[in-house]
Image: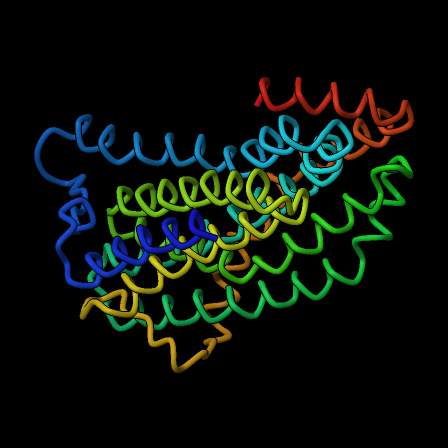
Length: 309
C-alpha cells in the first residue's frame, strides 16, 4: 500500500503544479507554418507526432512485458495476443476518427472563423464522449464472442476476456485524449499531446509494476493500470481545453453536437479510421490462425510482435 500511496502522491503533485501553470513544458507553443523557416516549423510540428505514435505502442507492450516477466506465459499470451490485435484495431479506428475533427477545426481556425472553431470543438469532444460510451458497452457485452471467434485457447480465455473488458472501461478517456490531441494539433500545438501521452505511459508502467509485483493482481492489475493511465491523459486534455479562454474552449457542462459539423467530421474521419483499421483487421485472421497452435505459440508470437511493433 505504501508504494501505491507514493505513486499517487507524485502524480497528484504533478497535476497540482499543472493547474497552477508552473510546469513550463505545458505552456502553449503553437507552430506557425506561414512565417519563418517553413521546413523547420514542419519538422518541429512533426517530431512530437512521431514520438507520440511510438508511445501509443507502449501501452499494451508494457502490460505484456510485466505479466510476461512476473505472471507467466498464459498471462502474456492473453494480454498481448488476440486482445492486443483488437486493441490495435480500436486505436487505429479512433485515431482515424479524430483526424476528421483535426481537419474541420484546422480549416476554421486557419480562416479565423473562431465561432465555427468553438462549435466544432464542442461537437468533436461531445461526440467523443458518446462514441466512447458506445464502444465501452459494446466491448463489455461482445468480448466473449469476439475471443471465441478468434479461436482463443481455452486456458487463456478467462484472462483474455477479463483484460479486454477492463480495458474497454477506458474507452471514454481514450476518445477524449485522441480527439483533444487532434484539436490541439489543428491549431498548431503538437507538443502538449505528446507530453500528456508520456505522462500516461509513465503512469501505466509504474502502476503495472505496483499492481502486479506488489499487489499480485496479475492480468487485472495491468488492465486497471492501463485504464488509469488513459484517465490521466484524458484529464490533462480536458484541463487544457476547458480551462483556457481560447478559440478552442470546450464547455464540459454542455455536451452538445452540431449535426452539420458532426457530419463533416465523420465524412473525413470515418474513411481514415476504416483505412487505419484495415491492417489490424487483417491481423485478426493471422492471430486466429496462431491461436489454433496453442498457448505456447501465442506467447511466442506475442513476444515477437512486441519487438516488431
